[in-house]
Image 1 (cartoon, rainbow, N blue to C red):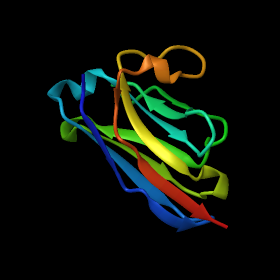
Image 2: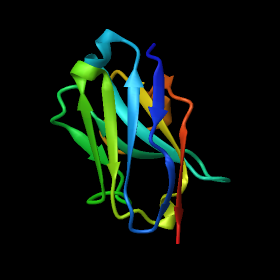
Image 3: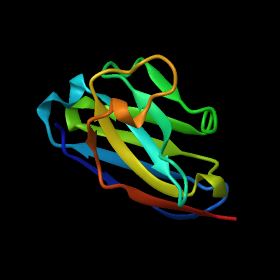
Image 4: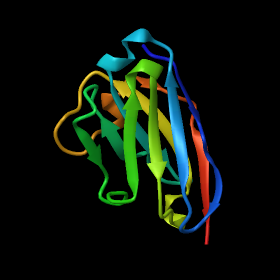
Length: 125
C-alpha cells in the first residue's frame, strides 16, 4: 500500500480557487492510478477526478469538468488537484486515493486500496 497525505484545503469564497496536493510515500508512486474523492456531510463519498500513471489519461466527474484539473509529478511523488470557479456545493472533505487500475465508467471508492486522511474544503456563498 501507499501512504498518502493531503494538503491545501481551506476556506474560500465562491468563484475562488484552491490547489490540493497529495504526497505519496512510495517510489512506485508512478505505477499507481491517483484519484480524488469527496464526501459532504450526510452524503456518500463521490468520485471527483483520476489520473493514470502516464498523466495522459484523466477522468473527471461531470460536476467538476472544466473547473478542476488533476495532474501529477512522478518525480516528486505528488498529485495535484487545481480547483477553480469553486461553488458552495463543492464543500466537502477531499480524499486522495491510490489504486492499480482505472476502470471504465465512474470510478468507485472500492477500486482504490490506499487513502489519505482527507482535507476540508469549504466554499462560502
